[in-house]
Length: 184
Image (cartoon, rainbow, N blue to C red; front, side):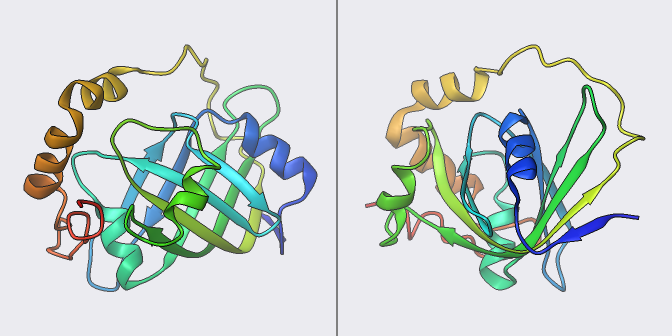
């Protein structure tokens, strides 16, 4: 049985800050459930009930499409070494695009990221800690630089072409607004 918390405490914050990967789940009532791994030093804890993370451009844009129709989001962090633990952050998220008023202030709090397409701002309603004893051990070997290098090579024009071709709609045809809200 998990232990619910109304907010992040210092122990949970320390645990989250040490993780190299986290997982994000979103869905709308009529869409596929999306579950994505995230990494690349893209997350920041703002306070006891709020985290933000910057999202790199990828092959789909499901989380953005979902959150703009239904703000529910769950983030999960797992310990793959030492003491077992799983932390789930459940709440309501907002999608922040480059043209949105909040972008500059939030982006300053995160490391710059090649290919960044949006920032997610999660208002945490429930923190759940569970044992994690079934999670296997894995060894962290380092960050993959492939995506960062790819977006460096593509440049702004290549990134915008990719958004136009591949990131405007979710798999279920939901709008992501990535072009309208990111391209000047």
